[in-house]
Amino acid sequence: MIVEQLYTGCLAQGAYYLESEGEAAVIDPLRDTDTYLKKARQNGATIKYVFETHFHADFVSGHLDLAKKTGATIVYGPNSPTRFEAYHAKDGEVFKLGKVTIKVLHTPGHTTESTTYLLMDENGKNHAIFTGDTLFIGDVGRPDLAIKGDLTEEDLAGMLYDSLHTKIMPLEDDVIVYPAHGAGSACGKNMSKETTDTLGNQKRFNYALRAQTKEEFTKAVLDGLTKAPAYFAENARLNKEGYEAIDEVMERGDRALSPDAFEAAVNETGAVVLDVREAQEFAKGFIPNAINIGLKGQFAPWVGALIPDLKQPIALVTPVGQEEETVRRLARVGYDHSIGYLDGGFASWQQAGKEVDTVESISADQFAQQYTQGQVVDVRKPDEFSAEHVKGAENLPLDNLNDHMAEVSKTKPVYVHCAGGYRSMVAASILKARGFDNLINVEGGMGAIKKTGQVPIVNETPAHG
Image (cartoon, rainbow, N blue to C red; front, side):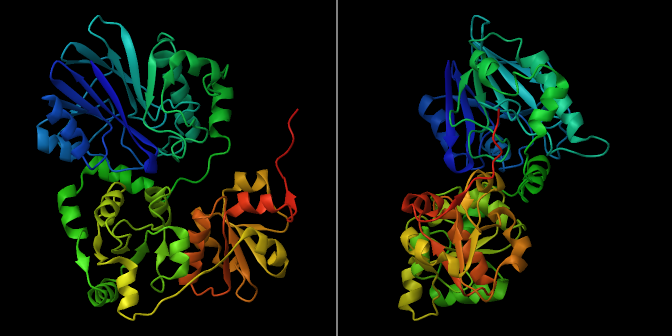
């Protein structure tokens, strides 16, 4: 029996490859399916099933392409209508994979169709559960994403409590928990950096599993939830209704454009210029009105949060050699309309004598000497800001910066910072594209500012006990 977690850090997402006696299954695959196909081919195995735990909201799953390329059966649990051919399993139904067995446990709560898959070894012993977004390490799935009709988030939280207490917690303590996400995903609020654990540990240490009553559980899991990223609903729809084959998306987007052709294509299509270089490289020079979202951070989720229209044409500026990777990572979250990339990267734009813009970027020491002369904009999340922030700073979280442009000064210098420098450059690029010219990015963010010891820090988090 082979059980392998295939973890993608950008999306904080775990897919799973299972194999026994030459038969394989993939659980919650990403859209780019080459990894799974290669693994099966190397092992001489046939992919028999693609199991989906629910209609994922934070990425486009690879179920359709994988089934088309292998002939595998797509399996969902109950309450999962689709517009494509799939097998909709009943609660308690079992599937044979070589010498092992996979049992369907319907666990609604995160969504109504959420399903956990229980893996039993060749001796019938419970070995592992693949919980999707039902149970994470340190957390449970948020119950506010699937509200519809008369169903409230409280209703879903109650379903989740029942699912956990009737289907999952009665299992043995040595059962391994394999969730769909880890820390950094917006599908939960308190996830561990660990990507797997035993169920026994989770019973002891997961705050949600320690709740004594349904009311206590509901209050705990709903407290502190932030607004879901804008692209979630569209990704869930694509996973339910279907989408274009990724090979076609890659062919369209992986297209080299000369500086003149790039400029013409942007003007003709109204494409967003998305520059995925690192923040400090971007600051030194970029195409006017380009938005910077670096590949080396949580790239795909930030694209999803800040570009609301999945059909928006996107023209790419990437480090040389990372063009294909960028198109693929956009496709993972449903952005299928890349129109091509700048051939030769930003250097070719400069060599062609095209117009260039910059963002002023200063050290934390410089910030300490001059920040009182302007407006300090902190683009971290509200809980980060409450924990500690620069005295007098204004919190305009990057997630919804577009809704707060009126609060940014157009007359005074605007010092933009985050925790480490990634989000602040994204924010600076957006503000620059909207006509704000007095922008100053603070390198190293809050971490560097604190180290100076020269800037007063405020803590608004209430004391406990």
